[in-house]
Length: 82
Image 1 (cartoon, rainbow, N blue to C red):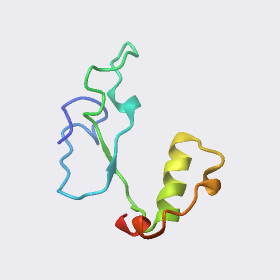
Image 2 (tube, one colour):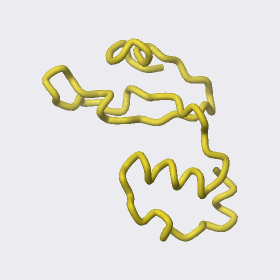
Image 3 (cartoon, one colour):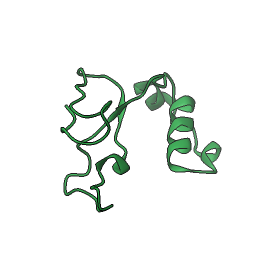
Image 4 (spheres, one colour):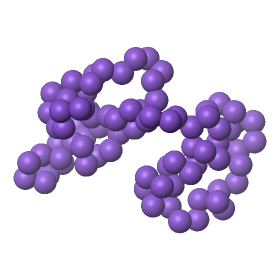
């Protein structure tokens, strides 16, 4: 469950076990711009969760601005754990 601060659509948001979500540290900033001590208390749902490694890699690369994500080798059978 998200803490009771931040945007209305996130404040107190409850996630079911196994529900795909992401933590964005900007969601845990205080009003003065400083980062809260427990900066991973807020999460957002991922509306279209990735179902395979290439899609997950693309999502992560887009979120954190990795430009050469296509150079990351496929993890083989471990990629199916996604």
